[in-house]
Amino acid sequence: MVTKLTFKGEKRRKPRQDDERKRRKKDTKTDCQEAPVTLTSVNGVPTNIYDVPRDYLEYGWTLATSHKDLNGPVMICFDRSDHFGCLEFDEKFGLIAAEEKKVDIAEDAINFVDFEPKSPLFKLEPREVTQVLSVVNIENFLRLTQQTQTVSDDTLKLALKNSEGKYLSYDDDANTLVQTDVLTENAIFNLRANTDNLGFFISVGKMDSKNKLIVTKDLKFRIIQDTDDLLDDMNIYHIRVQTRNSDTGRKIIASLDLKNESRDQFFNDPKHNELLNRAVKELTKNGMKITNSLLSQIKRAVEEGNLNEFLITVKEKIKSDRRA
Image 1 (spheres, rainbow, N blue to C red):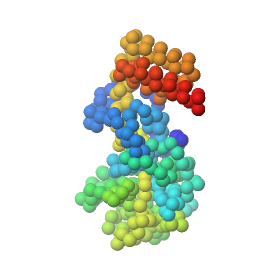
Image 2 (tube, helix red, strand yellow; image 1 turned 60 degrees about the horizontal axis):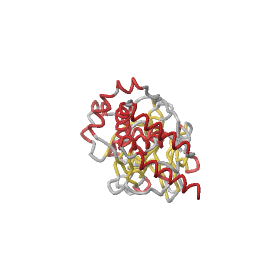
Image 3 (cartoon, rainbow, N blue to C red; image 1 turned 45 degrees about the horizontal axis):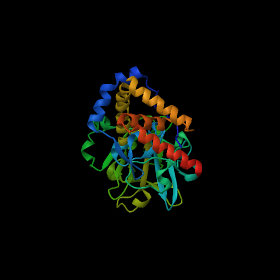
């Protein structure tokens, strides 16, 4: 399932025309030279990036495995004794725990991890915009307030906005999170990476205040001052991000864009274009539906010079499927 919710402050992406793609060629090359990607691990399976559906990269959600992934809209998800869900901002009650039946489960979700994820925690997607919070970079604020020296390597400080574009801020008196227009020290969230496994521990306000975001086993949301880190099992969260904003997702998209530019030039050659058209007609005649994914595989076979072998393999699969 691919979720296409839109969020306040998010820019809608439009399909790029060929001339626009060319204008961006220089920047795309820079991205790919920095971290070239051709193979990645998707749900524990080594996968060629050209086999990853583009829609999943553009509109899907994936697991944040490091601070580098924390950009744009995020879902803060939890597992409490096999009860899954996410944090959701309610205008009346503030931040609450939304249980599993209130979110979507994407069975075909992709995660850039080196194991096969079995838990629904790796498949959650938002059903409502209130289940999505937006990450705000606060480096300038930290610099101005002279707090940068307090940040440890395993911790990222950021602010979070709700679907109304308001900052989430800790209210000392009510001991809860409220929405505000102004960024203050109480609106700073501290995300400490779990060095033993995946996930993040989250507190709000000054790091030494240890105001932990807690979801109990009966799915009640609380903010508790936990100076001795005794409640880590109720303070651990998996954060899901839009795949295109994740570090690996960005690199894959940049590599694909660069490859597509090169591929366009390759198929401008009438000889290569004729091979492509002939293969498409042949598979269509054999009853194959030509999807974007299949078309990409055909193009790759033409580029690599093994089109005949590819067509034989596909035809054998067609026959096998029909017999089944």
